Length: 260
Ligand code: PGA
Image (cartoon, rainbow, N blue to C red; front, side, top):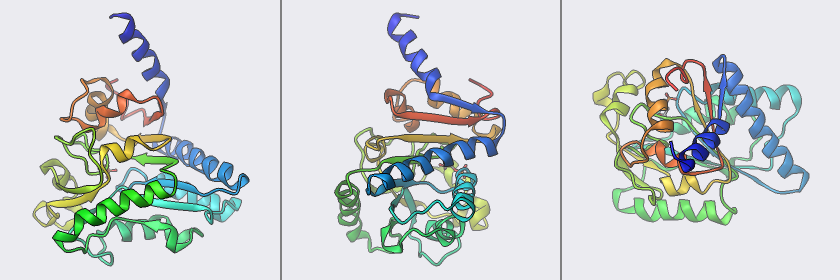
């Protein structure tokens, strides 16, 4: 191993936090997010949070709801941008990420509704790119994301940036990978009913966030976590682009970290 690799290996080790169970990992991330919100509150500023969906962040949201309900954490100064949404998708559908976010977080906290942003899955095809450009502009107008929460798909995706996504990609319409559609099959009553497309923030949108937390839980993620953290940086595993950053924390339970 040459010196550069040793330095990289050292900083990677510092970026990895391994918890004995999923709850502890989730509480750690929730407390980090709460700290960002409170620090911004003290300065009279907005906290701009990039949020994720899927089974992984549910424990983080549960703890944030608890902090709101039992410890008085206010979300009045919070602005949110979700990573992605299926396309096409109507917000009232059970599988929409709008429904997910309401159910798991927004209905239980005091974030002002007009400060919530989730990609719109109801647009006409020819209106999508302009909408995506505006999504980017809105993030920039708020001064960028203070924090981005990420899960990781077994395809190696972050957001819905599937294999083949470029480092410079921005918010856009994408095709979903077969693995991703298979993993969503239960939610839709069969993989064939999972939409084939989605709107997602890009890799570039994500890496510009000031702080990034990638949370991975359970043995189902062990293999992709090994590739994402230790594999060659490549569009074939989009999460590997995070290896180049100093402001990422990989928060894992022991099962997801088993192959590191
Ligand atoms: P999951 O999805 O949390 O449901 O495993 C993660 C992701 O696809 O990013």
